[in-house]
Length: 378
Image 1 (cartoon, rainbow, N blue to C red):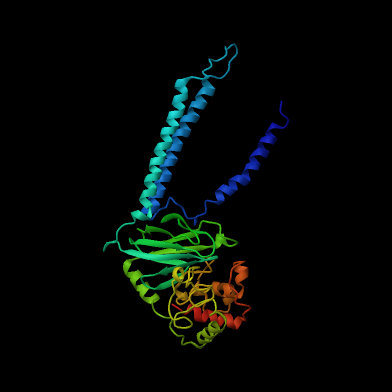
Image 2 (image 1 turned 120 degrees about the horizontal axis):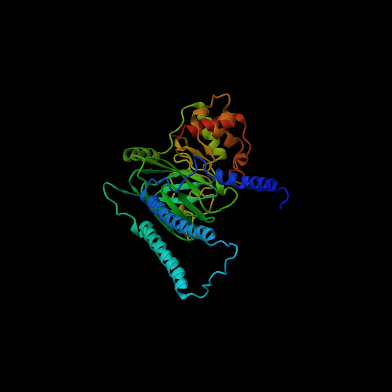
């Protein structure tokens, strides 16, 4: 007879609690899900998931049902003879070989169909009702840059697109491998240095969708996030018209001091159209190892994001912080405690260790000036 059977049972149950806590931790309210789809590409991938899941559920129930029935029906009883041995039965061997093979062929059929549905070659042709927007997604360490070549506009951390348009995405990296993934809109596709990858998706619902890097790319891989903001066609045109403009010169004295500070301490890594660069640049074309490619640190290939309309963005530092502009009034007595931009300028390595932000130590007055200037760049 076992010693302390109940105690051992409770110890085993308690030992499972950490495993359950890990499982439940993955069920966060804001976690992106491939099941909450907002476009045809994600819907196709989600549909494949459900097909494979239900096939697996049916097989599991069938196998476990037969197993439980056999245990109950044919369990050993006193006086029972040895059961009949069916080792080497050709009919049974064929049945449990052919049926799994057919099941795998069914799964293969739906998988290949799904791959073809979302392949770049099956990108919808542009129409008046469903235009085509071309975007280049550039993976940096550790933030995302988005360039719209047909509009000559570059932004960071947020990809803004019109609803029901086909978004053609060129994927580029000149550092390490990244992976572009927006679970609600499209699956994962890698950005491989020296290799051209592309994809497409359509967003059928307005809203903001979380995107992440799905390939380990270094220390801050988990903090390499971005948003896809889906807006109406008119709102997109208005936003794009604003983005195409050069930065407006500040009139406030505090912001003017911030602009001078930017020119002296930030312009080597960041660009602002109309201040230290003449235009937006296409990183994919300019910053390559091919002949004629520019080196990092040149105006065409600056280390940090372009900040021309920084004040209109919703994220800071690759999605680590929200751009809570309502807390960033330069006259806010708690600016350093409440304004995320101020926190980032005060201690970028404390906010996101290992990043390339090398601004040096700033005084509180300098932070106030930069906040006033950058948040005014709408």
